[in-house]
Image 1 (spheres, rainbow, N blue to C red):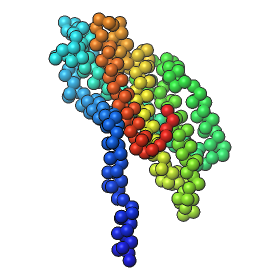
Image 2: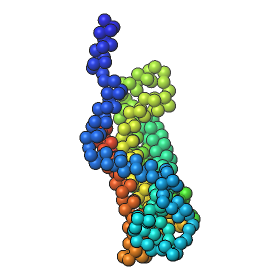
Image 3: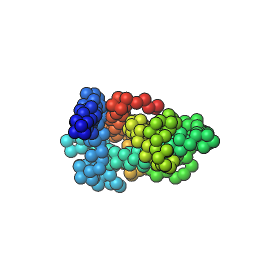
Image 4: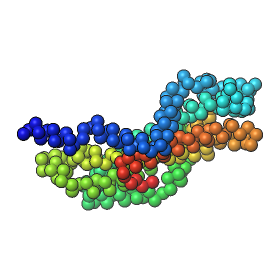
Amino acid sequence: MSTETSTLDRIVSPSRRELWYRSYRRFAAQPMSLLGLAIVATVVFLAVFAPWVAPYPQHAAIYTDFANAYQPPSLAHPFGTDSSGRDVLTRVLFGYRLSLKLAAVILGIGVPVGVTLGLVAGYVGGLVDAAIMRVTDTFLALPPLVLALAIASAFEPTLEIAMFAIASLWWTWYARLTRGLAASLRDEPYVQAAKLAGAGPIHVMFREILPNCLSPILVKVTLDAGIVILTGASLSFIGLGVQPPRPGLGTMVAGGTEFLPGEWWISIFPGLAIFVLVLGFNMLGDGLRDLFDVEVEQ
């Protein structure tokens, strides 16, 4: 009898490998999602190995070669050269490193902080919930870019200050998202069973509730990565982010605008690089949203 039951369980309940395969088939059925994944994976690879794949890695730092300044795109310089004779393609690849670092640090801070506060608010409720959400609502009432501008302009403009400025407000979205999810799950039977079994609040929040919140959180992280990169590039464009000679993409776009329309490549290619990376994250996030069948507020 036990053998028949185990066989029936295997037939009715698919294995983890089968679940992964079905998920892959659903994701692969969306060409735009696959394209987004390919874009993100390619950019990450190029950024990580930029010192080895960039044609002129020395051009990522202080470097001048005025004899080759303002060279249009060619085989030697596919993206042309800037006013100092530096290879634009090389600087774009190293700029990707800074953009991805910005997104990783900001989301690495904002997601844990926001998720933890949201779990506590949604699970505990009452005055704790009200206090956390009122603080969250206060930050959400401020336009993100305006608050980041105010913080960044109050200090010496650097990449690190830009990270702090953006991270100071990004946790709020995850706090509100997780709070709603936790509040809807805290009365589920499996949560009540864990509490009756003697599990403490921390165990219930992080071992019972959080795993069931991961799909919407993962989708939002993927979508937010592109927004964070765009926000960081905006700060750099107006001089409050990455500073020369570091190859920030927004900084490169701003520095090349004075040479338009003649030497268009100095500004256009870094701008296209930002567009491609943000588009890749957005398409990947849309694919994950359809895969997990969740709605995530933007």
